[in-house]
Length: 175
Length: 208
Image (tube, rainbow over all chains, first blue to last red; front, side):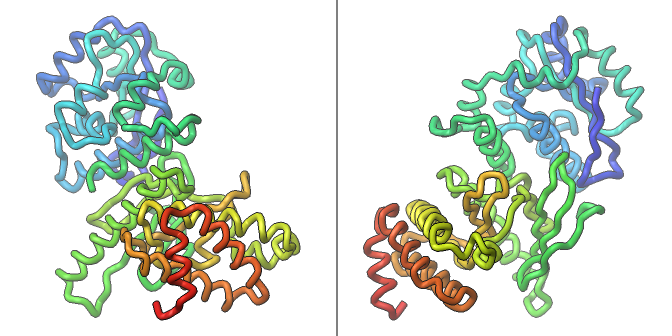
């Protein structure tokens, strides 16, 4: 697991994230997520849609800020992080696309606030899978889906251009 | 505002900060309230300007015109978080030994002209074209357009001609003996825009 500072709302704690592969209980987690299970305080994200950790950090910052201002668009802070990854304001579609599905085998777990050790324990208890290093993120991108979801121009070829496009689309979702 | 933010520039409309954000050096542009305006009106105008600036930036990005990537927009606090460009302004470059050479100037002029042509093709009018608002990336030495604080979307030939006129004035007032370079900018501009010939004609005719 890695922890990052929450730049915009530092008083809310840090952003904790961990990557899991060979996940076996995705169906169960997805069901709990959709049922708005309050005991599930960790957001889970389809890791093939993450090109770079900055996507997660931006989504988390925005969520924490809106949470502090009492302006969440979704029910919980966790679902807000998932929602913020999407470039559209369609909540159901955003959660479906960027949240995990029954068939997900690799995911990113993310949580804002709490002591690192406790969060780590909570994440390992919640997700039945192998904890892997963050560098794994690079290896399993689903570029086709990313292109479709973020409406990326076919002329955008290199990773840097694609990533900037994604970041721009996320930033403009609310305005 | 992020607490490590360092004020790097203060203009008439906004303050510009440099701060760590999401593991990157980030520019945060804050539009501040104008005390002479009615608070309600001020809030409305300011947030509209913030949105407009962010939209023009992403509109350019989507047309592959190099501009800072917008990271986050906070309309409530009138903040735009965007990419920090490592490099230097064309203004500073032109006074260096290398930047004074005709060969560097004509290379640069060609690039600036093309960028502006592309920008006008997608109907973005910059509104404040100066050599300080044209940066060169350190790594690639390519031109980046910055400060879209006065930008707007318009398809009017007049608006685009004024954009070029502003740049012409900026050149003649800050950089003596760059008439040739400016002519080269216009030449490249004329070749890359859709309606650029008409726009250049308008500029030539004056009375804009």
